[in-house]
Structure formats: structure tokens, C-alpha cells
Image (tube, rainbow, N blue to C red; front, side):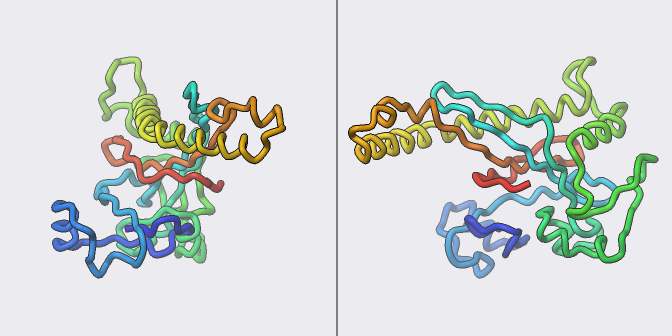
Length: 238
């Protein structure tokens, strides 16, 4: 459970409650005591995340919508792999949250722990100080799963299978919000033209084509290399 429009991992909670699950299934307004005041985002907890060196990780991907009409979307090939602040086996709160602000308070930073990946690869350390690039993760996944993870075709590597899922997640997610985004841009364009009736530039501009937006997609990979969308940020940090 995450409070709506709160950053820094503040008040993020993992809740196991039959009452809460019942309210969700029945589509009721959530009244459970675990729900903080105000709007919140309730997400399903993925119990089998991919672990690297015993740490939970997720991906921060940067997606640029260069135009909404026609729709033009670009996904950067690089991004950030964020580590939790404590070993997953510790069951501490910071072992489940990969937000850099939360992870920065982990024991790894104080003790400079460098647990081994367990597969003969390079050692890793949890938390914000140890963020990987997607290039490092790609090499790690291809090496670790090359012989155990079946791909769609013999020419598709494990990472290519992951990236194909990422592209689908981005496509489906952006497509689901195109209509309200176009309506908002049309409203803004009318307001702009009304505010500057004598401006040729304001009258000629088409915000549907001229506007762009940078999104931060947070994606979790589970132990079977299935990708799960965690959330989308409209003001992504580094």
C-alpha cells in the first residue's frame, strides 16, 4: 500500500490481511485500519522476486512520449537497477522496498557488506550506493539464465525475453491513458488560445503534436523472469 503522490518511499506498507483482501475482491471502499488517510495505491505483492546476491531488485526505466497524436513512444535502453537496503531473508521492511531513499538507511551502507551473487559472478551490495545499469543486469541475466530459462525462439536470449515484456508493458500502459491525455491537451490548448488571442504562435500550436512527457516506469522481475509493472512516475528522478 502506497499513499497517492508521496515520494521517498514514505508510508509504504506490506499488509497481509484477510479483511483487506475481502474488501478488495468485493470492490468495496477500503476502510481497513492499514489504509492511510487519503488516496492510496494498493498493489499485489509479488512473493517470488528475482534476487541478486540475496537482495531484491527492481528496474527504473525512462519512457519518453514525444507526441500524443500521432503517438510516438521511446524507451531508453539504459536505466537503473535498484537494490533493497537489506537481504531479502532478513524480512526487514527495507528488504522489501527498493526505493533509493529507503534503501539508503540499510545496514549495507553502515557495514559496507558485499554479499556474493552465489553464482560465481561479481559481488554485489544492496541499496542505493550499488545501483546497477541495465547493461550490467542484462549481462547478469544472460549468464545466469542462459541454460535454464526457455525462450520463445532459439535465437532469443533471456534478456531479450525480458525486454520484450518491458516493451509490451510500456505499450499497453501508455495506450491506456492516451484518450484522457488528449482530452487534457485539448483543454490546455483552448485555454492557451483564449489567453493569447492575438498570438499567431498560440493560435497555430497543436499541443497534441508539440507536447512531450517523460515517465519513470518501475518494473519488478520475478524469479521466472516475468515482468510486473509496479508504478509509473510522471516526475521521475534519477
